[in-house]
Length: 121
Length: 422
Image 1 (tube, each protein chain N blue to C red):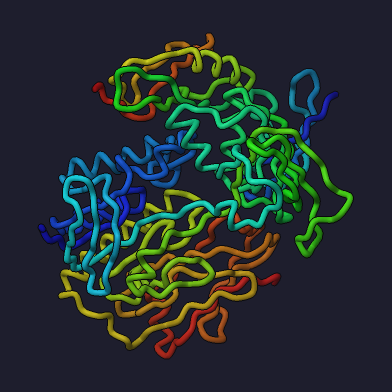
Image 2: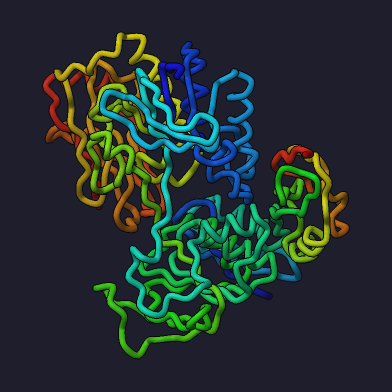
């Protein structure tokens, strides 16, 4: 049996939630004061994911950097691998919102896409 | 110089939403004046996601959210001038501005919408002791350097203040390889949103020290170390609690101040609590035809609320012009008052004859309240009593007033919003 403590982000209450796990399976969620906390805690201990946002160097455009995000959420444990690929990447203008800047970033199966328009100059 | 019906000062989220709403309400003579070289305001550097959950039912990044409105401005053919600084707004609504193409110019407007936003509280306003070396940035300046210019301000970071921008920058700089050593917050609670504390600090093991402040900054040319100490209930440092952190960067995220120099010189009456204009139900200031919306009016937590508020300002400006630019009738004005934990309300007055069927009143609380009630009194009678599990200073609150409810109280003089235990 293993326990994990988290702060719920469902609302400003920020309940301190304790999750009891047995072989990776959630046995009990305590400390939450509403159903949101239960849902959040179960997902967060079994499969925590995040959207990663950053910028990529872009050449030939009206801006130096193009802001980007992962097109969907990626496993939390992969964040720094994703960031490594993002920092190594270079884009060429033009780039428009939604354009793929990096395909299948860090082997996650998720693309990194532009979140702003950079026009060629 | 061309004249316009509506001049909007600022092309950020508030100005854009006000312009779109004014155009859609039927006015074709609108000009946005923006001092930056592009529209979108601060959203352009807020590259993190979480914007637009209320407005678009999806989580967008700042630039994406801004572009939804910029595209509407472009598609609707609304005129705007970039790199243009507004120098003065006269009480007769003549706007004086300048840029490199037009030089100095004046536009006599029928209505002016104030949408200048806010700026960060700088070091000079915080009275932090110690040297004044390089390496001290406001969180927003660091955000611009990292996200727009592509420069890292430093590698070892201490952050003072737990405002949302500071929390976001803690994560952002961690992503780019910096070590964020600690976030110190003077107050016993954070000024930021809970989800930012968890996802920007807890996720990366960055400690948040509540009731702590910076008591010394070391470094002649560049920051070399910062000392923080715990503060007592009087917010004064407690001797013996000092902790020294070697670092090359100190970020300040200690609050936002609405940018109202233009409003003040125009003669707009200010609310000392919000540092923004006093407005009525139409978001109109004491100068008829001058409206305010967004962070220049009061600092918001979510941009969705800025857009919604600005839309009303835009619509009301069109209505004001369509009605012949008349001064609001003085009769039937109800005063709104915030007490017992509620710090302020926007608006400050309601003219019942001009209010919509539903009116959103926004406010903030001055402390953390658990299991309390947001109560609304019509004169001495309590008419609303909404239970809230939690109220926090970092989050904006709202109540919605119904015109038909107000109609039941023909002699109503004062509406009071307060926080009650029971």
